Amino acid sequence: MAEFIVPDLKVVPREGGYARGQDGVEQILRAALTILVEQGYRAVTMRAIAKACDMKLGNITYYFPTRDELVRALFDAVISSYEEAFDAISHDEGTSVEERFESLIRLILEDITTKKTTRFFPEIWALANHDAFVSERVDEVYRRARAVLNELIAELNPSLPEDERETVALFISASLEGTTMFAGHEKPWRHRMGWLETIACRAYVPLVKSLKPGDIRAPASEHVS
Image (cartoon, rainbow, N blue to C red; front, side, top):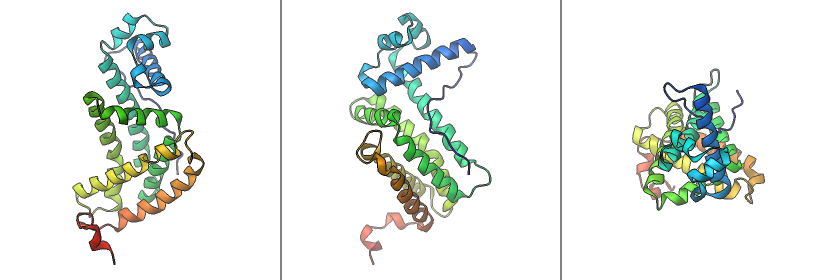
């Protein structure tokens, strides 16, 4: 089984862009991410980014005329890196769907232990409650991140209808992401993340394979023997 790298940033080249221009875009987005991780979203201002990049403010606005455009590009670069990593797992030749599913779970949980992820995602979760722009970006991030998980669930259990498969993917994604506050970077249970990975793999693969169409629609009491 291939070893997969925890995602970072993937800056998609702009059409017709010169290499130097692309380098400038990446420098700006990396500076923005660093400020967000170290100081919080409110500190991500055009002036702060210009100072971090040792650029004039006009150079920043040349690439990104508004802060919203810059933030949108930052979120896109973050999620694009996950899409690339997840896609590599999904198309890992010579491995079973069970192995690919477990690789995806482990990659998500290992990523949660990084400083970037522990700081970045809780920050935008909180903002999404009060900022419509951030809320839309967060919804897009997770919708795209769940796409590969959804595909693997379809391979593990082809009989599940699409809406049930999407709901299972949502449940697994939410469960994994929920460990951030407990076992993320410098969190109290960080040292047990390896155990949590094992539990997740042993729990979710059999769960997905055992579900029958309609199971999750029935009241929980109907499943109690």
